[in-house]
Image (cartoon, rainbow, N blue to C red; front, side):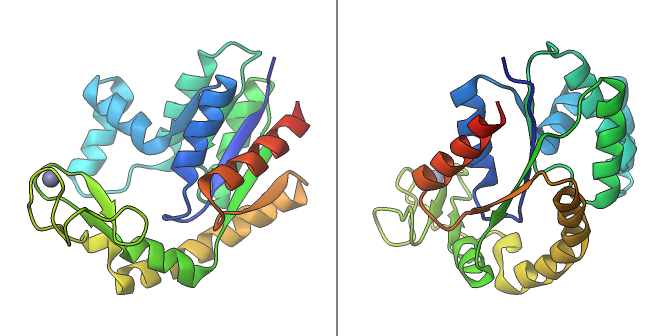
Length: 219
Ligand SMILES: [Zn+2]
C-alpha cells in the first residue's frame, strides 16, 4: 500500500525516535535507526558487523559506506510495496547522496524528509534535565518524568546521575557541529521539494498528528 521512504532529521532531544516508533506502529512499516542496525550486525557477527567492530575497536568511526551497506541489506529484503522510515540517517549531505544511489538501484527514492525543529534553548533544557539511574538504567527527567522522591530512583532508591553527554557545555559544542553538517543536508532535501518542517516543541500527540497528516498526504 505504502511506498514511502521517510527520513527523520533532527538533533538529540527533539523526540525523533519516539515519533519514528509511533509512525512505524501506526502504519505497520519498518523503521531503521543506524545504531540499532550496527548493534544487530555486531551481535550476529555478520561480515559487515565484524568489519564495523574492527573500526570501533581501533577507535575509528564506522565509514558511511558500511552503514549504507547495512541499510541496503535491510531494504533489499523488504517487499517492494512497503515503505520504511530511517530514524536519524542520513546525517550528512554525502550520506544522503549515498542513500539516493542505493535507492536508485532499487527503483526507490526518498519521498519525504521531516525536520524536527525546536528552539535551541528549549532543546538544551530538555537534554540537561535528563537523569539516569546508574543501577537499573531507568531514565527520568526532572521536568517531564521526575522520580517520586527527589533525585532517587523509584525502583532502587539509588541517587540519579546525569550522563556526561547531557552536560550543557557538551551539548552546545555538539550543537554547533550538528548545524554545520545538517544545513547542507536540509538544503539538499529542500531543493528536491520533499522537506517538511515539524515543530517538535509541542506535545508528543500533537507532533504525531502533524506527522501523520504529512505522511497521509503522500499516499
Ligand atoms: Zn534504578
